[in-house]
Length: 145
Ligand SMILES: CC(C)(COP(=O)(O)OP(=O)(O)OC[C@H]1O[C@@H](n2cnc3c(N)ncnc32)[C@H](O)[C@@H]1OP(=O)(O)O)[C@@H](O)C(=O)NCCC(=O)NCCS
Image (cartoon, rainbow, N blue to C red; front, side, top):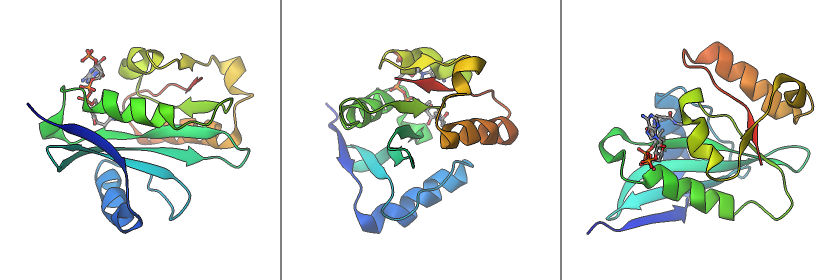
């Protein structure tokens, strides 16, 4: 049986995490700003995720990546479960998944914002949506919980 553990990244792991994100054209994290978690399968790093603190006190759950050899074993599910548990009570959280993953994030209570609702989202969330749309060939959606 494999042991799956999700833990908070140490400060000295930030450069490695940023390198893993940069490899797949994901935004990187600034030191001290984000809560980064690392999933390990039997002690081997298998994936990453983070909560980004926004200027208005809201958060963005993102940076979810599971390294190719560890996919389809529930690692992303474990990462998102851990991050959602760390969203402070009453704080609004956004996430910007690729469209084919909308139903996955819906399991955690995220709901897609339509264009009118998105106009009222935090500026960073709207900017991130614009970034995703111009950066990735797959379409991204803005969700909140
Ligand atoms: C998307 C990704 C994070 C999924 O990681 P994973 O560990 O394989 O996911 P899990 O095994 O925890 O599966 C969770 C759910 O995600 C969904 N899912 C995973 N891979 C999927 C795929 N290729 N297509 C559609 N849905 C998928 C499924 O709903 C799955 O639930 P199920 O197993 O009950 O069907 C991983 O494929 C990845 O890192 N991809 C590249 C980066 C990326 O797209 N990140 C997400 C940005 S929003």
